[in-house]
Figure 1 (cartoon, rainbow, N blue to C red):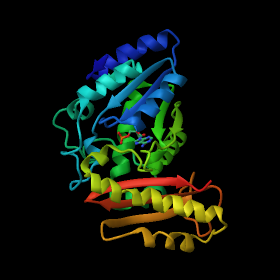
Figure 2: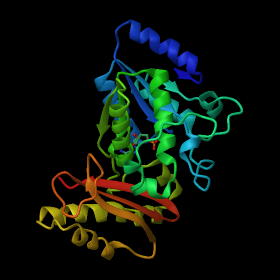
Figure 3: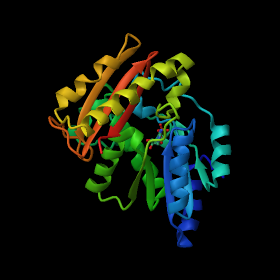
Length: 284
Ligand code: AMP
């Protein structure tokens, strides 16, 4: 069922909880693809009832980012969710989530701000305030739905690490389940933003997974020096690619590595045709 109101979601989920059913939440911004569906499938396996939220969250977009043009395909999303046996699609308006007349800023609204150590790197470096927006909306969704489990993709590795940190630091009684990255056969990680790319752009975008796979291969061959591993990327880049970052970090704590080990994650952000794409890989 498609619900837009917080109160209606609360009422419905309350019924599930009273019947002792285990509730799973899959937060999304919609334009659903197989990556999202893998989270939904995992939620269906793990829980009795599944809520999928579809909300393009204004407060996690910077002023020059793609909030207005972000793909919105609620009808198709609802259909897909129905096919997967999702119990509730929660698609609120920004007004429903943040109230009437509120200026969307931490001047007037309570924000949940994750620690600086986790946000002053990778995507947080260029997307100022992004993870405050993410944690705030996720916290709100947690409070509205009060699920037993919530499902997030490794695709947004920094995000899931930050959510786990928030859950731990704020004693939130919700189990966070991380799901692997779903890719096209070509290797391109699925993303709603791939819709912005032409066919040629999609080919150029393969550079992200190629660079990451090559780093993993080099690590498996015995190269551990992070500078040397990063060096291997440059031969893949052309003038079609605008590299934003390539980092090797601890996959749990986001501490920077100088020497890679089995707990290392390689993360990349790169613009192709002006579209900002991200990807990552565990070296083991
Ligand atoms: P989004 O709609 O982009 O906010 O994503 C909603 C959730 O789906 C997040 O937890 C993402 O990490 C996850 N997700 C997005 N793309 C993929 C993918 N290719 N594979 C697995 N999970 C994904």
